[in-house]
Length: 625
Image (cartoon, rainbow, N blue to C red; front, side):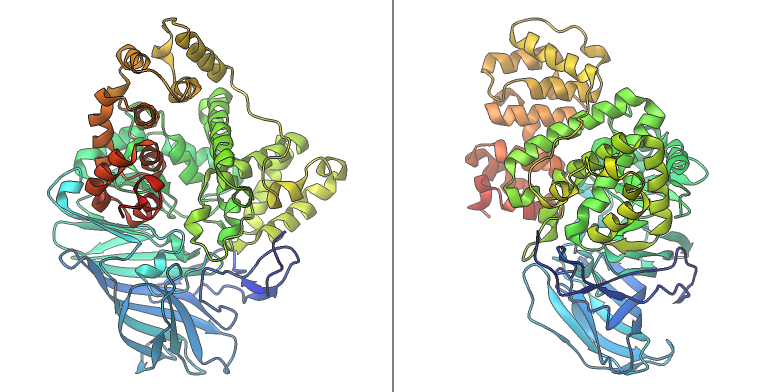
């Protein structure tokens, strides 16, 4: 097990909160020091010392400047200190310039105060220390971001669907919020926020918060306490389409109708999840479809999921991503990992809930296919990772927390929850999960705290069942313990069809296949195929022309591995137009060094910094970066 930490703090928090603009009345509980043997509790990815001085509320007044590619304005931080002996507020910052710092006891009368940046760390950025007085409750900073801020992607009009206006969006997870707001950037520190945002004429702004428009200024308010990585902003030529009483979608006008059709079931998803795990506590659930450079499938920003356009398949076959991001409204947003080593508490729970949503709406066969595909991806990930990377409670000391974003916390975590459900029964486990979300609502917790709650509220009720699950092995050891694995007859049939196809048979059942069956079929084929076999696949199934991004990405991976030149134009266009890291990273890894370097030289500028950082490390192209 990892070495014992030197102690940390966790955010208790009340179960709900209200806010007045400028003076949030939400008063989270004070931090308590906790040290539990066997777990690293200190958030090694933040300079904040919240047990001394903690940010409770963030008030932003910002202007978005597309010409200079910066955001500039002010941030007022409302803080709570441990006592009059505290004379410094420590914040996280990266590549920002501070024009002035002022402090106040009442939020109205401010006076200048000294501040300093420590030398930057390549991963964490710089510690920003602001001198405070015993009565300080507010700190105001006038600041500007850098054009290279890792959370911000500035898109030229040609990179958007409409082609007429620029676009900006943020991606703050895991520790990128500090690149566009100086604050305490730790998932264990929850805060409320408000913002006034000014954007160029003809553009609209949305954030992960309630929205009001007053002339040229958009005003936002998030009264529920969230970690900093869930603060999000998007600016562009976007319009809105309602999906239901509490749901809707934002997108560029040319994409809006397709997005609204694709997301037709979102209101039903919301209602289904509430039936399982309790009330939705974020008022509204909207989505925004971003330009294709967005590095992830989706980002669960509360009230406003940021989504990739690659899920617009035209047949609603990829809505599992929406179910996943919606599930985060309970696991991740409502109950959050306290450190990035506890990331599996966010993602493992969310994958489990995602599949329960899909089962409730579309049946057990669909959910089980999702689980089988996920398990196959987990096996591939485990085979590609070293033993330390296979651990759920991963050691990220000295590393970027983005490195821990593999399929392991998602699928290994979900498989552990699946084992608990199988042993204790679905009804008991559902009751437990609902109690878990109610008890920890609007708080951040560690693996140790989550396990303690599990032991007290479920495991002790049936010790003989609890003894059948090797929790220590699941959480702290590499590999995969023995488990009851998902099974899908439909996917088995698709894999059998792949064997038959390799033996020369024609396959006539593909017209009714789901995305998952196509993936099972293609992945069952040998990695190395002859040019004739690749041509036969393409001619028989028109794979180079397919619209579904999941199927297309798998086919293009086969194209890259086998050097199938007739499809290289589609492959190159895909890499030049799509920035979703899940798709493009394996493609660059499979290409020859010459092709990888040639295409990446053209495509890199259009990728988000997070994607760039991942692709830059690929051996095929690292020497050229």
